[in-house]
Length: 271
View 1: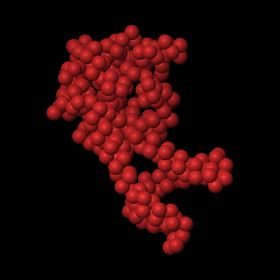
View 2: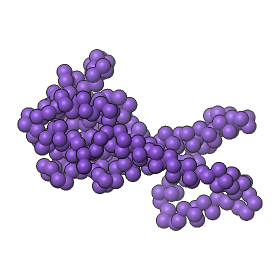
View 3: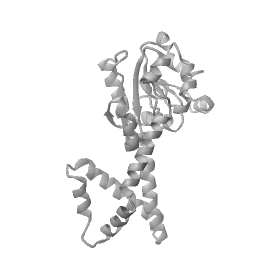
View 4: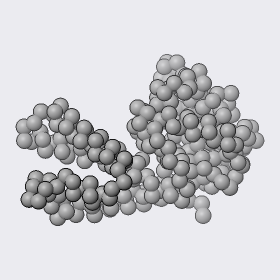
């Protein structure tokens, strides 16, 4: 048996795989993959590659479902009855919007976990939320520790209730794209005013990292942290006033709402 199987080796599946290998928790020999059209390339990279999605579930202790939500109905239909072939498998889904009870209807009575990672898992600096099925077959505490250890090599892991999954997505799963767009705006402005791109990127990224560290490690209210940067009549306030007049926080609120709503629309929920 392989320690980990991954079905779907796209951007997130690949990020997850490379992060785990980089951390040294597993080796290529302990992982079984199925990437459909990517299988030939995976073989050339030295990975063990299954002949089908079903083989991954039959031959692995933990299986990560890393394909897109819109592919779930097609793939899950191929996997019916797997609960009889490998009843001890732990199935981990990372698809936005696809609930555990929806997967159980197709795969039967095995153990289920939902996660939502973000792309920095590829450099072991990711953020992963995890929701554990409490209503089906129980996952042993030793198995849970093993699963958490695997995930924690990729970054920070926070356990949440499955009902909170959609709400959490813009806060970490989608956040890298929003943050990169934010950084791009500042870098582009610096270029407009003649600053070298390399210097601009260094300044922006260092400021984001330092500010995030302060936010993470301070128990002071956000308003106080903001006020620390501002002087009456100063440069920061001049910029903040533009953001406020433009409805900056309202735009963020609307973007998060749109992200959450899309997660709910991606796959039909089972009520």
